[in-house]
Amino acid sequence: MATAHPTDRLPGELSDVPGWFPPLDQVLFTWLLDRQEAGGFRGDLLELGVYLGKSAILLGRHRQDGEHFTVCDLFGGEAPDGANRAETAKSYSSLTRQAFERNYLSFHPELPRVIEAPTSVISGEVAPKTCRFVHIDASHLYEHVHDDIGAAHEILLPDGIVVLDDFRSEHTPGVSVATWEAVLNRGLRPICLSTQKLYGTWGDPEAVQEELLEMLRGRSDVGLSVQHAAGHRLVRARSKGMREPEFPRSRHYVATAPEPVATSVSAPVPKRRRSPVRRVAVDLLPPVVTRAVRKGLRGRG
Image (cartoon, rainbow, N blue to C red):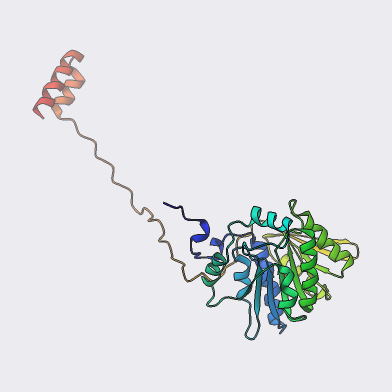
């Protein structure tokens, strides 16, 4: 009998969806998107690289009426070059479009626009200056990340936000090089840094940084520091035991009954009282006679 793959199980909660989307980044995504919406900032949403849909599910919750949400991924399809094929085979062998769509539809009534192709096609699929939020989490190869950042710059509205995943992981140096190159040479301005992601804009980050700092300073589950480098203010945030924020459960959620709690203590078993004859025998007679009396009494009882 075939063993069920973890991705075959329908998620009941966002935490059930496999993927790398820490609680801190869930909080930052939600806060930044809520801020845009509260300020009347409208625009489309885009995610490059979706894996099994964990961050896409959160993004989809923030699509407002009249906005579009587009995702782009190879989904195990043919990669554009040998290095990308090797990366896909190593890190994303379990990824299928079917698994992504099943997870996404567990939380939403309809899918986003799904482009099953290399992210290099995105500039021809999404119009320039139409998106308010772009999440880049596709290839870890420098050339691809460099081009994804360039595409995001074209697609984002002024003051739109781009999020770059794995910008400082030890196994993704290509992402690091492409990210800091964009900061130093391509006009990208950091808003904040989490353990995994850099949040940035090609607009002015000062106002959003000030509001973000105020929010983060009010939380006891966030470690915070501010540094300056190459003319940029770098707001660094890290989790201090942060739990995943609340998120609407999927339609597959089934509440589990709590374990019953014992409310009474079993009554002690009463000790067997010895008969008067037995007590006298034990107390007064020699041991040999006592054993004989006990044996006789057991035989009668």
